Length: 459
Image 1 (cartoon, rainbow, N blue to C red):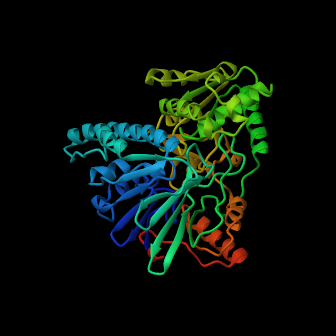
Image 2: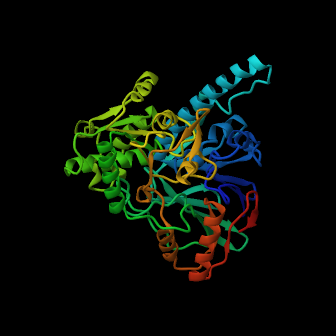
Image 3: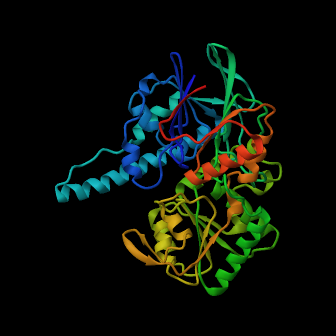
């Protein structure tokens, strides 16, 4: 078996791993790159012939793991797409939303291009391309070993990251017998508010493991919740708003659960929460439809009736979103995107970043080269929607809300192996991956690699 790393290598986005065993060709994830020159990078041709791929496994439905699937089909892929039922439901929403953005951005670009005489472009993919994705999806449950083809078996186990997220176990026959490789996917931290804790895998010959937080630990969840409460109360007292850039998938639903719990516990009172993301509303309904994936306590607290306790408002129309910018105080606005690279959150940043009485709360990872990272790193003036905005608002990073395992939790996940796997460290910024490799080497002494993009290994 040959394993080639085509994305998610020394970066946290664009995850894509390519496996070849004889005539069998398999992909694990096909994600969109997010960061500097993203539009150009995502338009590059695949480093393989999509028409030759037999199967695509999706570990979960975040855009950096599924975002290029319609492009894959547009360029000839007709094989199976295998994932869990909840991940399939959410992937459909994520891809239609991404296609809408591609079409809208292309239309805007081409209007400018026509006026200036510049070349026009085609969208990366369209909603019609997403239509072609859906018939190829096969839904599987956690925990059952399935046959892919002669000599290859697989199983999904719960990764505890977001609804429907998985680690993938893959068994394959080669010249010396059966071997096994595990793809961790994105591993969740313990005690995520809604989904189950990650499942440990106990044996493998090879392991491909994420390292998003491979060199740091999160603040505890309770400490982060305490800080959130204090930020909300102090911001409202000053007469400002709380803006929370949040991924429509996963983080927004966790925040709804936590805010609802805080209201029920009388720690917050009379708060108005605005979810300014139609995609987040649709995904929230998918969450509500899959309580079988929930921790026991979450089933009662996570439901759409919570909007009454929270004074929860979903803004569906553009006019509703624009109207939020007229609210000057005591609003919590949760909007996409989580890294501030697009979506409605940019408008709320434009109207609140310069206000010293407002607060910006980051609850997720901010990749290098994103607007969110610039703000977190303390840049005093940032460009938002073509305008320079001074940063006067309070900036808060609450690591306890991350859906990713931290350094110690990743080390614990590895420690559960009863044998000594060869390890490939992926899905982390280069320093985080290299630091995590050093920790693994020091503690376990396993053979490890931090692959470069395009690097290939015989396994």
